[in-house]
Length: 185
Ligand SMILES: [Zn+2]
Ligand SMILES: [Zn+2]
Image 1: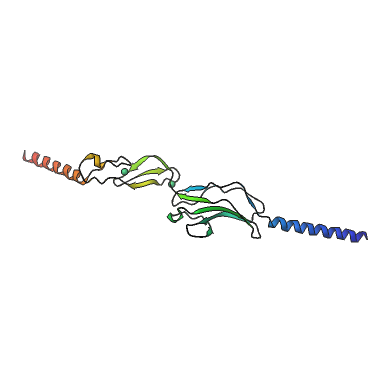
Image 2 (image 1 turned 60 degrees about the vertical axis):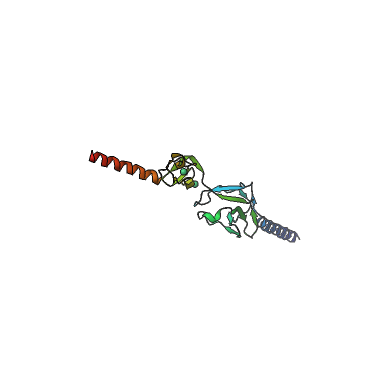
């Protein structure tokens, strides 16, 4: 009689143990907190933001991305190119039996983080990016300076003074005349 009672108790204990194990494995992980609604990433760089805290039985976790007009796919760590502009980002955590939890969704903004004054060359202006060292706000100068007046030759964005073709020819012509005059003189 005592043996029967004992074995019954052991059986119940084993069953309870099994149930609780299965139940805890089936529990869906919890993603703590939220990710920011907009995530700015430099063009041509990989997503490098802090993952949210995850608790519970986590079998797999990571970022997922949804390109405009596409479906959610796992993010493979590749640098993001132009087609990721406006894409959505979320974090997932899954248990071993296919129970998924997701974070809120963020919008990806592909943009540099400009710092300091404009820099320029003969055709373009830009500002340095504080994050990746790339060229932020890059563009061509605003005026092409077809006339010789200095006012038209100042770029409205960066202040670079262009030398118009006409000014260049004029300078050369004056230099040539001065040379000829000196030779004749
Ligand atoms: Zn950048
Ligand atoms: Zn300019």
